[in-house]
Each structure stands twice: as C-alpha cells, then as structure tokens.
Image 1: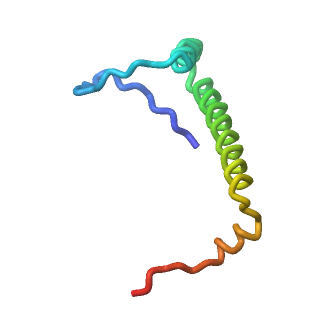
Image 2: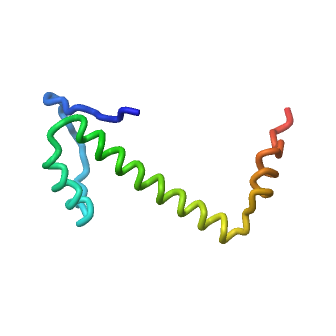
Length: 86
C-alpha cells in the first residue's frame, strides 16, 4: 500500500487554521529532516502503521477482556441477522 504524497510546489493554501504542535509531533517532525528518499519515507510510514496496528490490537484486547467478550460471543455476533425488515 503506497500512501506517499509528493509535495506540489504551486498549491495555494488558504483559510488554514494555525495548529500548535505538541512535543511528540515536533520530535517526529525533526526526525523527518533525515529522510531523503521516497523509500525511506515509505519505511517510516510502515513503522508508524505497525505501531498503531499493535496499539489498536492492545486496546481491542483490553476492551474484550473488560467486557467479558469471548470467542463464542464474537461467533454469535457474526451469525446474527438484524437487518431492517422492509
């Protein structure tokens, strides 16, 4: 999956709100100065996507455990038919 978007030099940006970056965002931005190729950008993007995939997996597992959701519950949900009758 390729999500690289090259910068286009002649784009006019108007009505943009100013956003203050937090320390973590500033740190990532400073690290971006070392990326010199599209391949390096893709590698970093893959690392970040993997980080958020793992984080999402942990949160889903935590939710599942806190709400006593078992595999049986998931199977039941998968087989439910709650379509709107017409």
